[in-house]
Figure 1 (cartoon, rainbow, N blue to C red):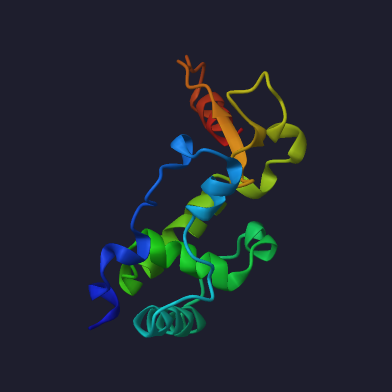
Figure 2 (cartoon, rainbow, N blue to C red):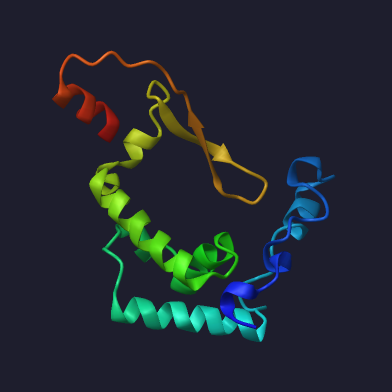
Amino acid sequence: TGCAEIAMAAVAPAAEPLAAAASPASAMAALPAPAGELSAEEEACLQELERRLEENPEPAVSEHAREDRRCRLLRFLRAWSFDVNAAFKNMHEHAQAWQAYRMDAITATDELDERSCFYVCGVDLAGKPTLIVRPGAHTQTSQEDSVQVARR
C-alpha cells in the first residue's frame, strides 16, 4: 500500500471524546499515539514528505522554530490521512498565508488583549492554548482600513 492508502485508523477518533472524558488523565489517554509509534507505511510517508521539503522548502515561518519538526510534519500528514501530496501542498499554502497575513507581527500583548476580536485564554485538557474568537461586523472606512483590521 502507498502513503495515500493508509487506513483512517491512523487518525481515528478516540473511543471517548475529550469533552466527555471523566478526568484530564483519561482525556490525555484518548489523544493520538506519540510520534514515535508509526507504522512502516506512515514512516515512509514521513520520509517522503521530508525529502520533498528538502527539494522544495516551504516559506519561512517563525513558529516553526518553536515546534519539533517531526511533530509538525506528522501533524500535517495526520490531518491529510498521510496523503503526502496533500500535506506538502497544505504546508506551503499555510506558510504563504502566514506570511501574507503577517502573523509574525502578532505579539504576546496582542494575543492577551481581551478587548480584541481574538485572544488566548487558558488551555484545554491537553495543555494547548485556547483561542477566543469574537466575530463581528466591520464597517470599513477605506480599503486600507479593511486591510489593517484583517492584519490585526
